[in-house]
Image (cartoon, rainbow, N blue to C red):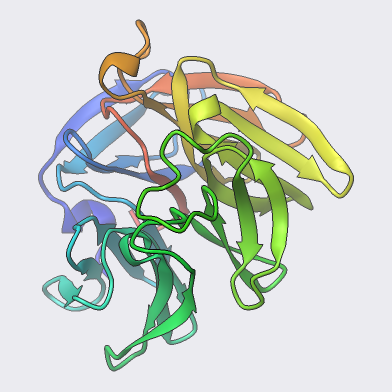
Length: 295
C-alpha cells in the first residue's frame, strides 16, 4: 500500500503543541469532518497535522496495509477501502445502513448497521450476512462501536428499546457493552456508551454525553476521566499514552471555549491527563494508531 500521505496528496496543514509519540489517524463525522493525520514527533519538535479530506467519516480500520473507512447514509452502507490497488475500492450495499463502525476479522469485514439495528459482515466475495440482529424497529438500540475483548467481538449500545430512536431522551443508565456472539452483557448501567476498549486488563468506555471515559476493573470503576464541555468518543492506545477523542457538542449545547474537537492525551500507566490538544474538526468519531511506515 502507498503511504497514507501519498494517497491523500492534498490537504491543509496545521501545527499542534504537544509532540505525539504515536501517529494517529482521526475520523470526523458530519459537516466539517473527514480524515486527519497527526504524525509522531520527537521532543522538543512540534507535530504538524494534516487534514486529508473533508468526507464525513465514522469508523476507520487499518491493518496489513489496508485502510477502510465507513460513511454514513440513512439508506445504504458505504465503505471505501484503500490498499495496494491503484484506485480506492467502493462498497455500497442496501442490506445495511447508517454505518457507525468497521472492523476486519480474518477474511471478513464487520460493520455496525446502526440504522437497521444489526451487525453484518462482508466476506471476501462481497456477500453480506447478518452476525447479530437486535429486536426493535430501525435504530432501536443505537448499536455503535466495535472492539475485540479476549478474542470476542463486542459492541456498545445506548439501550434496548422497541422503537426507532426510542432511546432519545432515555439514555441515562440504559447503555451497555455486550458480547456479540452470545448476546451476553459485559458492562451495564452506562449512559450513551461509545468506543469500548480493553487496555492493560482494564475496560475503557466513553460515556459520550456525560463527557467522561470510564476505566473499569473486575469489581467496578477504577477511575473516571472527566472532560467537561466536550462529548467523549474515539479512543486509541499507543506505547505510553491513551488518546481519547473530545468533540464539540452540537448546536445550542455547544459550550463556550469548546467549539472545536480535541484529543486528550492520557498517561497509560498513571491514567493522568498530560495534555489536551485542540484540532480543527468540530467532532471526532474514531481514532486509530498507525504503525511506522504507513504514513
